[in-house]
Amino acid sequence: MPLDRSIYFKAVVQEGNRLQVPCLIRWRFRLDPLQVLEVRIRVAERIGARAETYYAKMRRDGRFGIPKLIMKLCEIKAGDIVEVTLSPPETDEEHGEEQD
Image (cartoon, helix red, strand yellow):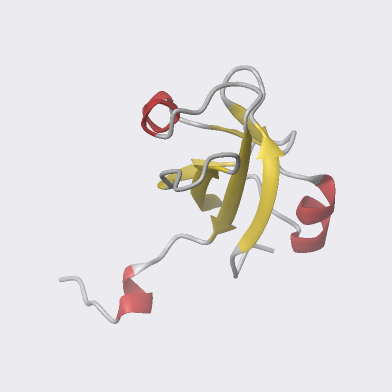
């Protein structure tokens, strides 16, 4: 069952620029490893920290990577605590746009 709404959690950035989605969230929402997710991330420990959004696929072990560009823009490093919002990607149908 694909994710149909936004979910929020905090996580620690692991070595290799990866994040682990908590098991309870994966089980409750039955996250599909094939689904593309919109990921919004920001450092939780800094006031006024910049948030960035990117698209990712979760691996079978419940992890997904953070692109190096996002790591640099948000000044994130391994061991930082981040606030993560996962949501389904917006599609053109949701905006009422038609494609030819």
